[in-house]
Image (cartoon, rainbow, N blue to C red):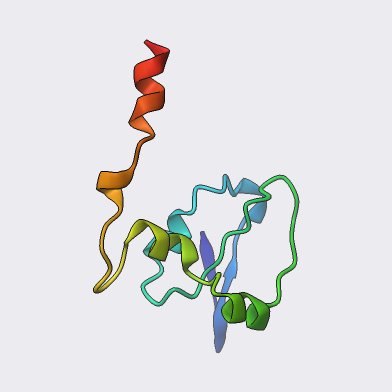
Length: 86
């Protein structure tokens, strides 16, 4: 969840409620977000470094969301876990 800030980029609201679901990164249409996988601690990041190594929007790219990207849904094998649990 983000809050509007007058004349500035939005800011993260209630960061302590983050469940690291990556949905905000997935739905960002300009690949401007990076969700750090360490959900139980606050992590500072350097935007320039994230951009340089290609992490901004990387989750969205890896699963194939976005204009002119190939979906990777058919390659997903997580359903195998559910089959083994039966």
